[in-house]
Amino acid sequence: MHVLLTNDDGAPHETASPYIKFLVEAIQKYTNWDLTICVPASQKSWIGKAHLAGKDISASYIYSAIDQPADSSFHGPFSHPNADFSKDPNMKEWCLLDGTPATCADIGINHIAEKPVDLVISGPNVGRNCSALYSLSSGTIGGAMEGVQHGKRAVAVSYAFEADSFNDPKILTEASLISVKLIEKLLSAWDDRVDLYTVNVPLKKDLKLGKTRCVMAPTLDNKWMKSLYTAKSESPDQPASDIVDQSVTHGKIFKWTPDFDSVHKNLGDESVLNDIRAVEQGLISVTALKAAFKEIDDLNTGELIIE
Image 1 (cartoon, one colour):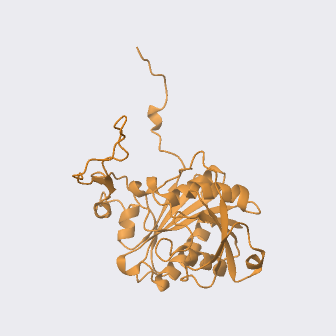
Image 2 (tube, helix red, strand yellow):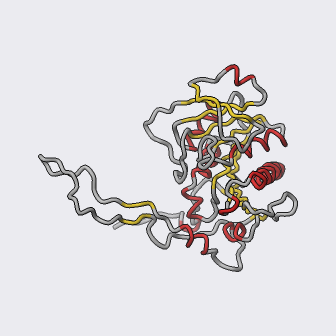
Image 3 (tube, helix red, strand yellow):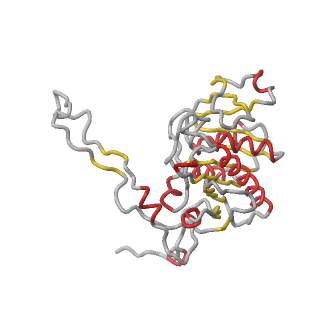
């Protein structure tokens, strides 16, 4: 089986993208999958399934040791694949694109992969992607959805970290083993109604294959309680303006300040084990999705008369 791996956090980095090499190691160690990696050249979180319309995309290549998942160092970037590093069995080639996760899925499937792709894995995301608020904005889920739009099965994987488990190698190793085994399980009984699965793994100290429960859970349909932005105080200085038409070169500033705490505290109906409630309980959540907006079937028939 040929797998394309992408993400929205980019190439290995100790803070921006510390999880993906652990998954790469687990795939190499526990499966016989052929693996092609194509990720954004820089962090692209919160971008959904966007493409950079009209922008030409350039590729570069890096090489990183497979058996050192906590080591974010790499050789490169190179403008083209490097023959010497490509032949080294201890090194893994990564294609970096100056685009989005969806860009990486498209180009990875159609141009980078040397043979047909069977499955797109997007992630592991640094942070949870449960509830509608996160899912609709997630570049990780967006990358998986783009894979579906090219006729591939896809799984989006996210690691819900706590302050004391952000980069614990032991927990990340276990999370990646679980992720691989879970993906194998999903593939073995893939429901034809499903386009993609989104998986959230809580990075708990007691996380353990065979012991930590894994549940199918619906996405919590939640809303923002307030703006994601805060208006910055006006500067006493007048903004710079053009001497001819008085147009300003910059104006009022709005700072990115989403209230994540309130999202995590609002778990929805207590009688429903949704994705965010499952993760809060230390469970692994799996949600089956269609790569489409929900429709209200009984409203989408008939003619509208406008007079």
